[in-house]
Image (cartoon, rainbow, N blue to C red; front, top):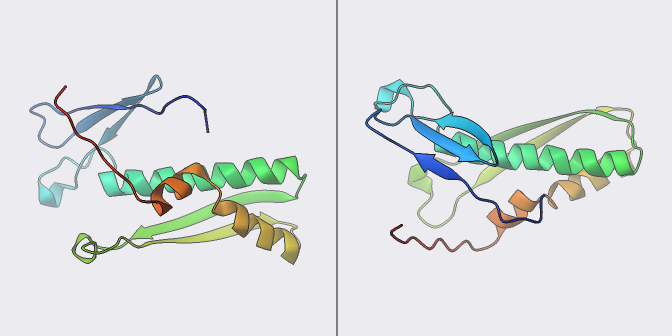
Length: 135
């Protein structure tokens, strides 16, 4: 991950829940499903959180495997988060990782250890403090 501070800007106008997200010169939409009043034109915020963890995990594993010249062909990460009602004391995210390629048991074990080294995993595993101020 880049050493610079990570920043993002989100904008929501009268489009109900369709939210524009800008970060590092890139742009995506976040939204809610139609059954809760959204337009379903983007991932919901929980899915975006899982996408961050999944992509960071895959990138971290790929960097390590390439550096060690492992025969890792593909990485597929399945993620799920507990229901909002279950988040009163903690939040549980499940992550299942599939590897494709000619890998030894030792390499698979090491890649699973490396998965926990991704910066987003570290961020989500530690206490998070959010400071909110008026801009």
